[in-house]
Amino acid sequence: MKFIKQIAIAAVLLIASVYVAIGSSILTVHADTQAVQTTALSKSYVVYGAGMASSAKSTVDSALGVTSSYTSLTSTANDYATYISSDGTTDSAMISSVAIAPASSGTGVKVNIAKYDGNSNITKVTAQQYAMVATMAGVNDVIITVTANQSVTGEAALAGVYKALATDGISLSTQNTTAANNMLDATQSAIDQNSDDSKYSGKLMAAVGDVSSDLAKSKQEDGTTATQSEVKTQLEAALKKYGIYDSTPTTSITLIVNALIQVQKAPVSSTKSYISNVSDVADSLKNSAGNAMSKLSDFANSADGRALMSKYGNIFQQIWNKIVLWIQELIAYVQTLV
Image (cartoon, rainbow, N blue to C red; front, top):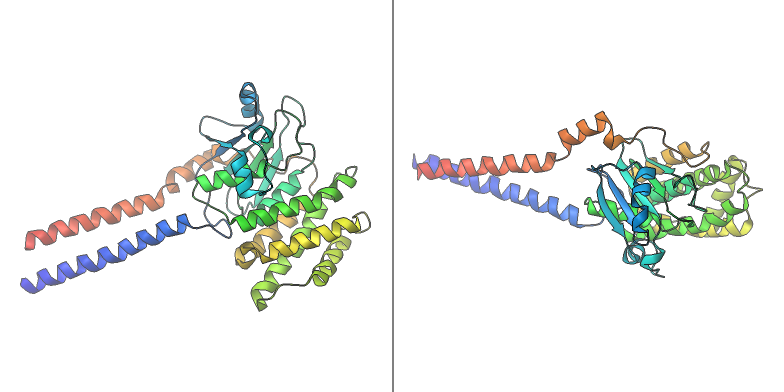
């Protein structure tokens, strides 16, 4: 009997130490930043710009498709400095609002730019830019909807997306988000100059995505980064592939090349999943036009979405609770033997 007691006590100590280590590692993963989003968003969020007029909230909610199930946040100038640019802005300048909802695996990033009270108030950034830039930041499998209660260019909207992910326990590398935002800036002038071509934005971002995927693959295979000349050659080939080389200004090509190099140096380009993620998004963008990329109902509010979240949303907490209960019962049993 004494031998059995010793074995039981040793087993409890061993198992407890293993699971404590597991629990510690889980906490550590959530505390660290991620090169790319690897877990599904657990719920839907709406992030209001700090500069949005309070009287506009109900109309913004309607435009974004927000329901009572959404968790509300506010995007501030501090968030802009954290995720977008250290150059800074003010709370009053944070006008655009975003809704972000989980999508089924393999969806990638889908973006809709919604009208506010019938007005298209996001005046510069396109749905295709948002989708590719968010992917370069490491975002995956979400549906993003953007709107604003007054006319804005739209550059700051992604700060709200990154804040929502961080609140959900998915903290993306700020090196990723900064590099991705540089791509937003780099592509803007070319898109502005081709505003009469509704398909140009999708083709340009598809070309950018193709090159970024190839650069990430090369980096992972041989551990080196491409030179500016090599990236320029690849980008020009991609632009020709999509038939937009002649309509893309030389100055814009230079800016995009520099931005691609920054993305290649960022942690996101060291992850295998990014290669396929950015390639898939590029494929979805090549024929995309207009402000609506997703024609599906909000996944989080669909019957399938609610069922999935109900079944798996707290799976790790449920497992951990069962582990703790089992250890407690085992300890109680050992104590009866002592």
